[in-house]
Amino acid sequence: MPPSHTHCCSHHEPEGFKLRQTVTPIVISTLLLLIGIFGNETLHNTPFAIAKYAILIPAYLMSGRQVLTTAGRNLLRGEMFDENFLMTIATLGAIAIHELPEAVTVMLFLQVGELFQSYSVGRSRRSIKALLEVRPDTANLQVNGTIKQVAPETVSVGEVIQVRPGEKVSLDGEVLSGISQLDTSALTGESVPRGVAPGDTVLAGMINQSGILTLRVTKPFGESSIAKILDLVEHASHKKAPTEKFITRFARYYTPVVVILSVAIALLPPLFIAGATHAQWTYRALVLLVISCPCGLVISIPLGYFGGVGGAAKRGILVKGATYLDTLTQVKTVVFDKTGTLTQGNFQVTDVVSENGFTEHQLLTLAAQAESHSNHPVAQSIRQAYGQPVDESTIQTYEEIAGHGIRAQIDGRTVLAGNDRLLHHDNIPHNICTVDGTVTHLAVDGQYTGRILIADQVRDDAVEALQALKAQGIKTAMLTGDSHTKLCLQA
Image (tube, rainbow, N blue to C red; front, side):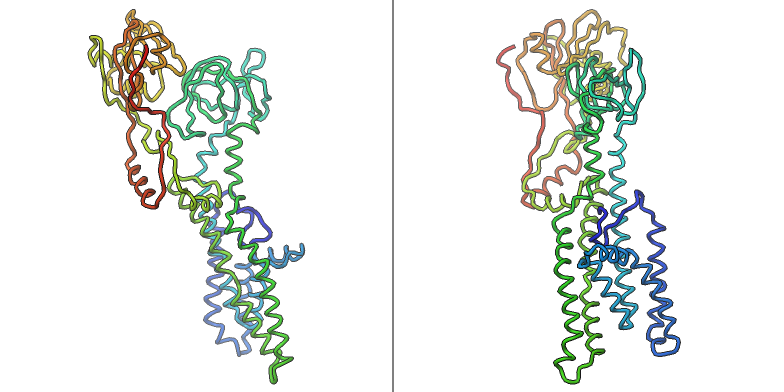
C-alpha cells in the first residue's frame, strides 16, 4: 500500500521483505503478553501491581508503535478523526481501566495482520522481478561512425542507435537499416517473434534475435513503452480499490460518533440518574471505546486485497493494483490471445502436402534448407521435423523478406518459403490461399510445390480454464491470426 497518514496499515515498505525485523517485535510482544496475562489478575490487587505494567506497557508500545506514531502525527495536522486515533484512544482506555492485555492484543493483532500483508506484498514484488529486468541498461549510440555505449536516458530524439543480435532494444525508434526478428513477449506476451525491416517501428524492451538493426530514436527513454510499463508496475499499489477507500471515509464519520457517545456516557448519566457516579460511567465509556475499536475492519479489507494480489502472483498472474480485483468481479467476457496463452507456444509440423511431382521428403528437405538461417519458431519447427543436419554448402544465396518469408538459391534452384503474400508477390500460381493454423508454402523455380502445416500445442489446463469460466456465466473469445480454409480466386 502507498504511504499514507490516514491509514494505520499504510506505511513506507522496504524493497525486500525483512522477515527478522518484522517478526521479532511480534514474538517479543507475544511473549510479554502471555506473561502479563498469567500475572494480570494475580498482581492486580497486590503491592506488586506495578510489575504487570512493567511487562505489558513495553509490549503495548512495541506492537502499537506504528498506530501511535501515525495517530500523533495526524493529530498535529488536525486530522484526528481516523481509525488510528480511534484505536489509540480505545487501547489507552483499556489501559485506564486496567485491561492491559486487551490493549496489547488489539495492537498485536494489527501487527500479525501486517506481517501477512508484508509477505503478500513481497511475494507480489518478486513476481514482477522478471518484468523489471527487461529495462535496458545501455544503448549503442552511433557517434561519427563509431559506437559508444551510453545510458538510454542520455540519448536524444533523432539520434541513431544500433541493436545487435541478442540485445534488448533500449529506446523506441524507427528502423533505418537491417532486417531481423524481434522477441516482443515482454511487452505483448506474444511468443512468436515479429519480423521488422526499414521503416518499421520498434519499442524499447523488445529483444533483437537475428540481424543487426540501426534505429533512429523517436522518443526519449522516459516516454518509451517499457518506461511507462515499469512506472505502472512500480506505482500499482497507489491504485486503491473502492472498498479500501471506504475504510478511510467510514472512519471520518464513525470515529467522531464513537468519541461523542463515549463522552456523553461518561458525563450525562451522573447528572440525571440518581446514585450514578462519574467513576462508574467513565469506566463504561472506556468499555465502549474498547469494544468499538475497528481493528478487524482496518486489517481485514486491505489484507484481503493483498492476499488476492499475492495469490494471483503465485499463479503467474500480475495484478497491477487492488482496484483491478474489484473490476474482475464485473467481467462478463474474457478475450484470450491464442499463442502462448491457450497454447504452449511450441510449434510442431503436423502435415506435409506435396504437389507437382515432389515427394513429402523432398519438400521437407527444401524447407529445412531454406529456413536454415532463420530463428523464427516456425523455421525451428521445420528443422526439428527434418531431423538431420542441413547441408549449408547447397545454399548459394539467402534473403529474408520481412512479413513474407524467404527466398534462397539451393542447388541452383530458386526456392520460396513463406506465407501466401510471398506467393502473390512473386506471381506463383496456386489454388489454396490460407488453411487452418500456420502454414509455410513452398515454390521452386516459379512452380508451387506444396505446403507444410504447423500447429501449436494446446495447454493442458486451457480446456479446464474455459469450462470454469463458462460455469460462472462468463463468455470467452479468442483473438488469433489463424483463418479458415478458403480457395484462392486468382494467382
